[in-house]
Length: 400
Image (tube, rainbow, N blue to C red):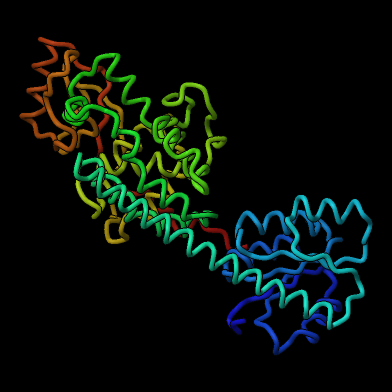
């Protein structure tokens, strides 16, 4: 076993914790925590952790709750419990809820404890090896499938490739467990569209009006992707991510009946934002303007807090300015020069007047106002506008 593998000891009794450290010092790379909350912080900030041993009876968060929370943050960490309360109900709950690998009774001899930790580290190595084989095998198989789809419709695969470039930094920022599932789901987003006739896809990409039948076909693509994957071993969770990744935060979208808000699984909410961003952004070198269309629908189509985290993660720091850009829903009469359109400006029949991203000059504004006298144009127009950032005065800062 590698001396780089970390073992976390959790106990609110300082003397007992110090005793464990003395017993195990020099044999493993040890980390310690005095509470469940501190154990979670250590796991998040010092991972990967191979094994964790937690006491059962601790205030605020007991050992079962601690190990259950560790499993969510670091699913590959092998979890063990050390307790003086060895009743049967505690053991059953620990195994069922905390997914415990070993259960030690206090007092525990050095030999038993060392043997248990050694077994846990070997179990961790097996988990990691299986995970690597699984990911590499699946990723290779999916890549072959994508190459075939790319021959049919390269545009579908191009969007998927752009999303995949963003996955790694985002999964680290969000500390997503089982991040490989999101990577595979991102690769497979084009899968459901292979049953859509090419003319309908071209019509959709061109922004042309679709018939109700054509809309239904496009809306069914997440369901098609799920049906194709659901019976493949290890891909059931990936299939569910794909099935829900076009479900809107407010409960609209596909599927018509399903979860909404934060009940939508985090990977599906993440993929919802990234696929929309891939369609809105001209390249993987993102600009602030590329998030505009998404920010307009924040809270409706997209999880607002998650969208902000993704923007902060992906948007290069050098793009942060002394001035800030805000989205404003304004009227024709209140348009400003240098406002930038967030969405295409179209007539009720779909005729394009001005494309999203157009920076408005005095002439453009006058043209739009003139057109509004002849045809209906939306009363509210979303624009990106530059405003000065508010800077708090140092005098308002308290030094108490």
